[in-house]
Image 1: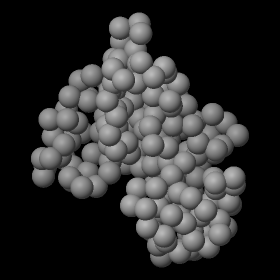
Image 2 (image 1 turned 180 degrees about the horizontal axis):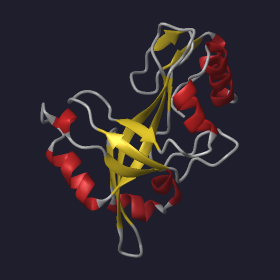
Image 3 (image 1 turned 45 degrees about the vertical axis):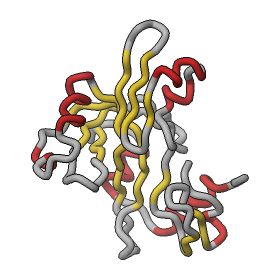
Image 4 (image 1 turned 30 degrees about the vertical axis):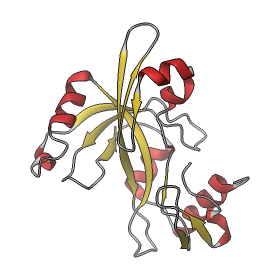
Length: 179
């Protein structure tokens, strides 16, 4: 997960390298779980950047991923939502649409696209794969993920009911132990 020493009152952002004070409000892996699970040779045949991933596999299939945020309201903070920066898988057609409109100022008007959550998050129940929809926003803003609302999962519950800063502090401590 991307944030170092967040539980110490300060943390170094894995993206910008800058020391920040307070609690980290965004955590997430640098790559989708399937990317991390394949061989170096398979990764060498693929492509991964900060926002998109294409992964050809040994069986001849190609998997497509986009980074997006799961936003969880924080009731007792004015710092905005807590965000899981996650990876979701898309169909080839949806990935093509994302790529064709990536710099389009009107891309926020694209219809939401079906996706599968492909990032393991620290919940008792597995988060991979959870069905979702990805909502594209204007260029420069990370798309957001809407999890299937009728799922009985703690992550889905938190996205609908929100969390407190105490929970954010717990997540910071859990995610940075041993960092």
